[in-house]
Image 1 (cartoon, one colour):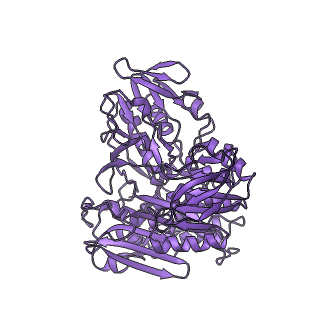
Image 2 (cartoon, rainbow over the protein chains, first blue to last red; image 1 turned 30 degrees about the horizontal axis):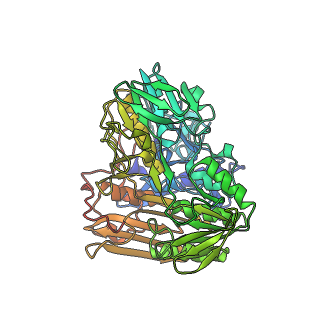
Image 3 (tube, chains in turn blue, green; image 1 turned 90 degrees about the vertical axis):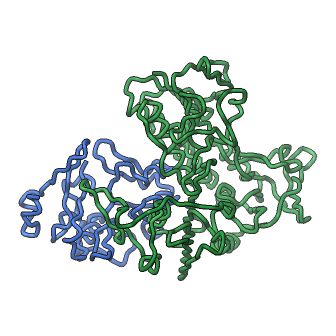
Length: 172
Length: 435
């Protein structure tokens, strides 16, 4: 499965990843048209102040996801093919058992009315999640974890890497 | 290998799925009284009319086909012979097994109240048919009474109120949701529910159900002498594990089926999981019933592993946790909801519409009540469960803590709580009386 690896020391707390997440989940797909005051546009990833500077807190799509175990409506499922923890908002009953259970505080009530929970969808369908693409410091990178737990870094194609993804990060 | 599973709710379904993932060839049979797989936690949504029975499912629509499980619905176990390894079913059939899972759940109990069993419009709320019957009865009356203001009672009462029925709730404790919330948070919900026309009788018990000559419900008479007029009664005064069919077998039972940390009963090859079993609960460290959804799922999965021959201990058997929403306000609680004695401290954070209380002892979180803003509730629960010492600066900022304060990541990107940086001790609780 793919996972977003966090290099916390490289995070500058610019929140570009949050803007990209918010914009990526609107119809316009653009930061330019993003209404930051609309609670429906909340980011699904977080930058929180930690003892060693800012820390990106992103859904881990856990191997044994506490949110899925707690979900009594079938809205949250662990996708055995992709490894992602998927959410079906149509099924969500807003019972908040997942919010009560995520040890990292990632899944939250969403939207204006807070009737359903919402979480990272790994930008389903995109080869690279918006947050990874938008991170200018290399704090967020994509990795592939195989069934044996071996980890391999996935580098974005040159066109995406631009000048903001330092080469040494890809060569680690 | 022949696997036989009794019950089609959280534990049974998750056990079947787990077994199939580990044993592609084994023969899995699932027996259930239920003729549909549905989430008991969503039954109130059928009463309010927000969901249809079809929308109350929690498993994939093609579950039994996908995981190659033979499902025999509309029947239940009425006897067990552990020597011959066979189960007797209510339709006369007998089923043989090599590994058996008892996940028969619980049933609502009728308290010993005069006329309660006689009244025609009296229902518990535990099965799909109960929810459907309550919804039907609600269409025939304009006033309902709910006995018990626990989560099931409150869900039922709130759903009936949403349908426009005048609802009176009778609760023996001095507040609603007495096991889930402290007085302050309960009072908030009570106030909001009253604004929606609901009536509460806390600290009251029911003496009898008032019936007409044809046993139709006309009201409740309370011990205090008050009368509550109503045309139907929902009983939510607790549940009892479905263990009757195990009488006379070597399966050890207390209030529920006793299991070890591998979910195995006193009889080798026979397992139990979910509301029917009693196991060592993580927060208290005691053997007890653990009737919450996440525990049932995990126990079902653990049982599935062990039945398929892959040893797996049941961990995180944390049953003292609840999540809810009434009147648009979410709440979460876990552990102690009130400080049990003077060795515990209560820290409170209040803001417009938000109430947060954390209970601490020796720098460790022992419980919390969060209402209005439940963001990050899982982190506090994890700190409680892991027994992480947050003495000092973290304790000062307890209501602002995020996972950034504990950030630790494995090579594969998984988060964890680093025991070197944050020494933990297994939670030791000396008294559970206050829970």
